[in-house]
Amino acid sequence: MEVSVSAGPNTTGAVRHVLGHLLTPLLMCVGMGLAYLGAFHAPQPHDLRVDVVGSGPTTQVLAQTLQNKGAGALDVRTVADRDTAITALREQNSFGAYIPGERPELLVASASSDTSAMAVEKVFTKVAAAEDAPLKVTDVAPVASGDPTGQGVFFLLVALSIGAYASVAVIGGAGAVLPMRIRALLAAAMSLVVSLIGTLFAGPLFHLVDQGLGGVWALSWLYAAGILLVGVGLHTFLRRWTTLGVMVLFVMLNFTSSGGIYRPELQPGFFGALHSFWNGAGFVEGVRGHVYFDGRALGGHILVLALWLLAGAALVVAAGITEARWATQQVAAAGERQTERQTEQETEQEMEEAVAV
Image (cartoon, rainbow, N blue to C red; front, side, top):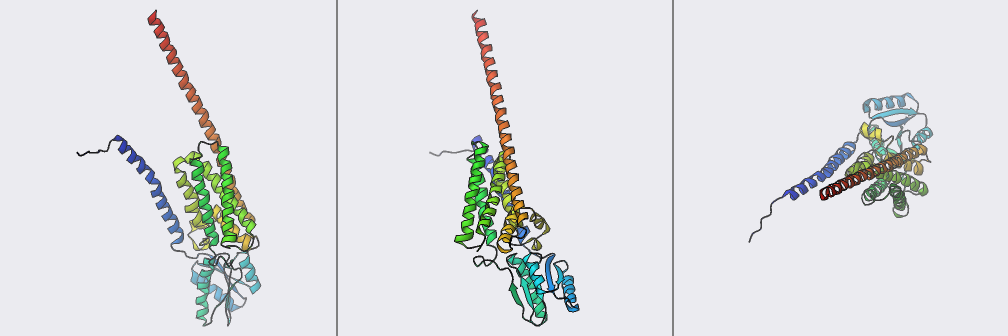
């Protein structure tokens, strides 16, 4: 005996429901492709600041030649001596300094950006080769021994981000029945836990930094707390689109503009512009400044992270007020329905009494 099963109204509705939800991963796929490939697929220097050390006519000619050949790729200037060049590198005002001569030397600061240092080295290796001289490369700000590529801070950023925005999905979904103040407390607690895990990774486990671990924890907490509060606040308004919204903010636009792989000088202008105020850049550059550059510009990076945290707090407050208003409206609507039912019951009772009379 054969039993045929046809797609009834319930099955059709379920398929439509699934297809509607499949729109989210498709948008994630498109967004990730546009963001990552747009930011990373063809890094090219533009206005990459480098110095040529010296003051004579030969130095001036070399600097001008590099500027002209670079066609906008390099911003070449001259500095008087080696110490001035090192100071500029230590203050992250330049990414390489070339000292011409019989034994040419290139000064770089890999802690500022390893990929930028590699781009500079590629340029000046050709310059030295044209002079038939081997190039000596000196790193005046090397990274920690546990982070030889200089990209460990970026991957720490990834771990913190995933821990934070994944927690948003749990707090916003499973915790939706809880009062907003409880959800906010859970977000604060999770940000602390995530930041401690990140600090464990950065220090004892992988030795990504060899000093300033307390400051790394503080920056990690600021960063994770900002993501959690923004996400929890947005969930009230975005509902099932929260995951996509958080991924756009804290993955697609965040990782690509953080400067952890390529700094703005090697990226398209859009991502370079985001670098100036996005929270991932605030974290990455904050950690670099704190650990390797004696706290240079650290206040500005902390301000960026603090503003994202305040934005998250404002969203949470707005979400709490909105939910309270919705609850009041639901109570009022329920009261109206109850009044209508009572009126109907009283009318029916009156009619029954009239018929009985």
